[in-house]
Image (cartoon, rainbow over all chains, first blue to last red; front, side, top):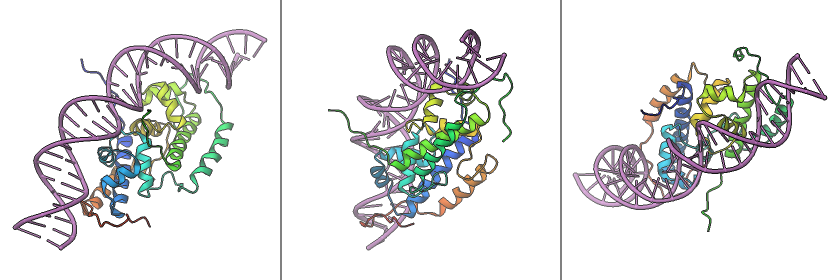
Length: 111
Length: 111
DNA sequence: AGAGAATGATCCATAAATCGATCACATGAT
DNA sequence: ATCATGTGATCGATTTATGGATCATTCTCT
């Protein structure tokens, strides 16, 4: 009996695809070869190909690294402001509850 | 001699951290437990913890899946528009060159 | 049209991620 | 203060991703 694996939602899958597109687009704009991008990112050429294809199994660190190199902006924060952004939210998170108390009700979905 | 692995750039690392923050924030806002999010995303509780901690080794599909569930928007496209976005850019990419000719010059970085 | 290079796919070996269970501790409600 | 439970960490076993090599094809430039 084959093991059942949980499929990803369409949105998650498409988001990975979209990021792959952005990376490929950025790479081509910069006249960069797949092999060159791979070397710069410190990964193999095959992995860059899977990243650009939107393979959901790729490590997020490798994908983001490739994105940075070809100039893809992540979460509305450029390389200059990302640090500050993280620090700001570290404080915001400190104010939130550390543990969630089960109300035995359905999780709140309306935001 | 230990094998040398390529470290990620600060920006890539911080982007993973930032996404983890967004996910944790979204989860807490919805009064969702780590275990509940894990179950909904089809991954283990331990993996959700690593995702929220910003571990760069996590599969991008699992991270995005968790993000979707707690309502984190990815690449300026909500669940309703992501499909169209991908399709639009598929055509745009088709117009770009399929292979990059090495000019024997430095890759173009100014964008 | 021809040559050289980039791309994409595949295979195997190895490194790494993920799971499931378990434990100690922190947290929030009563 | 007490108690139930969420959280975070760790361990071994297993699945999976990744690297490196190779091959066929497609593309770009001359």
